Length: 88
Ligand code: HEM
Image 1 (tube, rainbow, N blue to C red):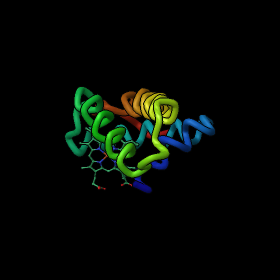
Image 2: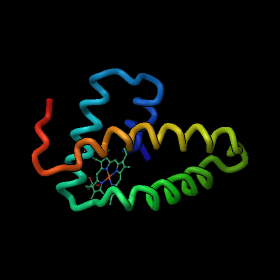
Image 3: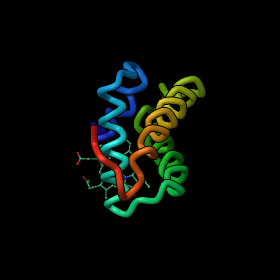
Image 4: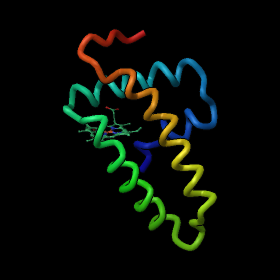
């Protein structure tokens, strides 16, 4: 799950460097062939996995924070989902 640290990092510290990283990450996903339409299914799966990993400590507040953090990160990743993206 360490791979998903950028979601938390950007949520806690939404600075321009993280934004640039997330745009680039979005572009890489565009190149992998990931579709932005599939991000909703990805979110559902990630949240349910996190729920299992948290066990008894999982609750609606934590789920809501994760959803918000995920959506913030994905919003920026989507900006990189184009062929002519140039990293800054
Ligand atoms: C439909 C949704 C997604 C698909 C199909 C997908 C697929 C992939 C694939 C194929 C890789 C490259 C293989 C690998 O390094 O394991 C990858 C890497 C990665 N993905 Fe995703 N991904 C999706 C969504 C996301 C989202 C929403 C995030 C949020 C942060 C994310 C974060 C990452 C990261 C951090 C890497 C490693 C990048 C690197 O350092 O090379 N992915 N993903």
